[in-house]
Structures are given as structure tokens and as C-alpha cells.
Length: 109
Length: 114
Image 1 (spheres, each protein chain N blue to C red):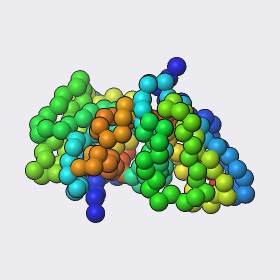
Image 2 (cartoon, chains in turn green, yellow):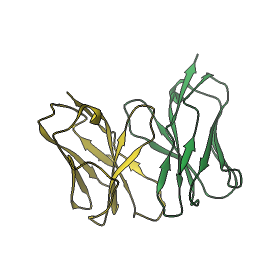
Image 3 (cartoon, each protein chain N blue to C red):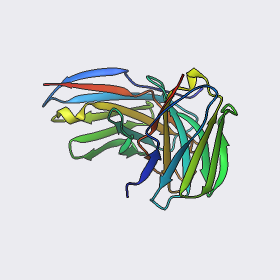
Image 4 (cartoon, rainbow over the protein chains, first blue to last red):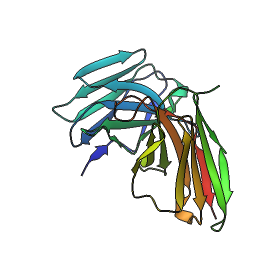
């Protein structure tokens, strides 16, 4: 079966750095997405990786290793507004999106 | 206009009621989706429409009935639901199904079945 694993919950301190990991086992691979979802709001697109390596976008970076079936989302200079759930999703060979259960990130002052 | 709009935002219904959820997208996309989101579980894809044609129905019970009159509007008709159907129902759109592009989500309709 197809599966995405990510931690259920993480806690970090304002101003610090946090890394949210995602591992996947899917039938083929056509890209990996990270979405951010604040409580009671729509998931919003953060990043997309299809090739190995690091993609940087401001305070957020996303890394992919296809050989290891592994990605991480790195958040720097954490702000209180970064408290949210972070969803990892992989597009398989049939362009089906396989979703992880999400990681709830709690930022403390 | 926001990209994807869902109404109502909150809905409480009894098991014998009939209600509908509405989704509208203003992005010119060709594909629209219904997802179910339950606490601590992955998003569950329910239905997909591509160019107004239903392309996927992921073994969803018949008490959920989708309708897509045009590429901008999507409905989810609900009848004789069960308490376990209580969840957040998210509508999403993308340029075209099968291209792998990002999804744009609405804020969801929070459904409670009593």
C-alpha cells in the first residue's frame, strides 16, 4: 500500500528553527508538496519538490531525497503565526495525491 | 473574489435531513475535488471532476451525491448521513486533473451530524 509518515505534533520556540520530516512509500513519484493549514482555514500551498535537493523560499525550505523516500520542511526564525498543521503529499505515477496525516506545529514564546 | 469559496462554513444536521454543500472557484480551473478531513487522519479524496465529468469516486457511500453543473461550481448533496460523517469537507480546484499541479482549497464546510 501507499503511505506517508510524518510526526503528529512538534513544539518549537519563537525565533528558533524546526525541521518537519516526511517519509513516503508510493507507487511511483511525480513530486512532493507541502501545505500549511491554520486551524479553521484552508490548506495553502507552501512548496513543491520533484528533483533531489533543497528549495528555498524565504524562511521556509523544503528538501527531497527520492532514493530515500524522504523530505523535510525547514522553518527558520519561527514566528507565532507559524503555529499550524503542515501537510506532506506525494503525487504517484498515476498523478494521485497521497496525503500524510499532517504535523501540528506549536510555537511557544 | 477569493479563489475557492465554500458555503455554508458550518452545518448541523440530523440523520434524516437533506442538505447540500456548495463550492465555487474563480480561478478558471478545469478540475474540482471533494475531500473529507477528519482529525489526525490524512485527507480522504471523495470525488473528482475534470471538465465537468466525474472521473473518480473513491468508494464513497451513496448518501453523498456530487454534482458539477459547470467547471466553476461543485455541490455535495447529503442525505441520511451518519454521525461518523461529521468532519470538515474541503473543496479544491486545480488547472487540470492529471497534470500534477498544486491544489487550491476552500476553507471548508464543518459538518456535524447529530
